[in-house]
Length: 570
Image 1 (cartoon, one colour):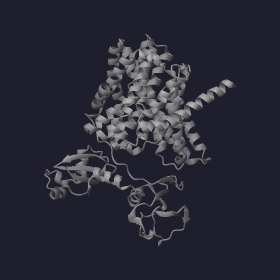
Image 2: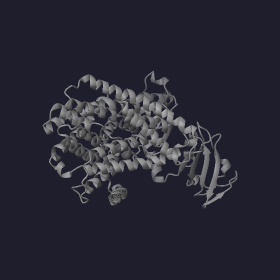
Image 3: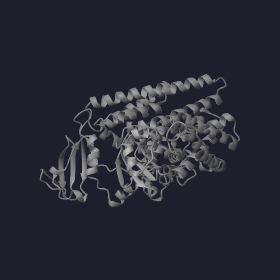
Image 4: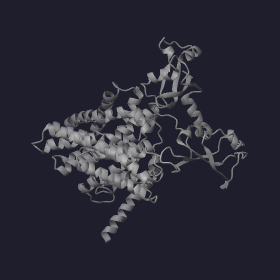
């Protein structure tokens, strides 16, 4: 009993310390995941805690469980509309990109550590994929608002490239440990990983969304149902030989885009579960490493990490994206820089240990060192690089709170809460607010009191309005109640420009107005159609170019149609 309580005490102390350390991490700019790893190392046998933890099987199990929950949560937060601009480039990076990155890194590892070709490639495969936990954490926690093309590509890539890394790792371990292994075995493994993971994930996501809409449960049981179903899918897919990581991510995507009213109860709980998984995973991995053993390989491992960051990843991005997709050089540079390594390489480095592969301890220490360098260099500099490479866009104004009402299974009504801060709304009667058809004011709070509003009620500073409407009404509400302070509005104005034109404006008229030279075929296009062609057919907010001495910036997009264009003289 005392042993159990001691374990609980140590676990709770590490958990609380990690959470409290996140406050310091945010102030000094150190990535959170780096802090979690550091605390685990400090608690380990070479640190202040002196805990001797070397159970790779337990770490392997915890790693799979944690990554499954992280991918499920990440999938539920990936909006389907991001697939419009990010799916094809992300899949290119998640497949060919992993192969190129792993191969180049493996060749470098072979030279640095005097390994055989297969051994070097195994090191490359272990550290060759970006990590969903690291990417989701960095993009969500740094306050960085990237343009949709870049953010969608990074999110989808990090959520779908694990199967390729696992496939390469298992294949190379098999070739190193089994003399009878053939290339056909690798081909069959590849077919099973993707051929089963893809359909099972899509089918399960559809089934989960239907079940959620068809059952009535106490609020607290919905997150447990999703967690149980997701982990069951993950395990079943793995048992069948498919990729459980791919399946659970895709199921999360379909479930998160189902617009089920129960999602408002599921997502907050899963946010906590994802954080708990990240903290627990990185603490366990930190405990698992022996820092003094890493000192012997510190110099070559650092060179390997730098080669991965500055050579292998950029070359893979250029090869996979530049010939096929309309990314500008700044976007390519940022995507290259956010090739973050996190828990996945360390978990993959446990595979050779369990398989009894020669030099397994070396592979683990190399992977751990590469992850530390990646998190410290790339993770800490992410906001600076986003600004430097101009891939950041001003954040959109949003309501203080929104929640589905659960009235209809599809296209449901929502409650949007706004605080009145705009001086232009001071003293305005409610009847004069031009709401979309079907939208209504549900409640008005003033001085912490619920008052009964009428058409003649005048708005005052600080009022809280609860508006009933649909998702399509949100742009109108946001424009009406935009409460951003003057500095933020000025920043947005400086980014998009002082003047805005309709995307439907004939390019011929725009050319006449601003003295632009256009060809005969361009004269038949609208301004939006012309810019859409320049941006490769899938424009996003923040796309920009210099043309005829004017800086043109996309302000608003619906689907693949440009609605508003900002411009300012160079």
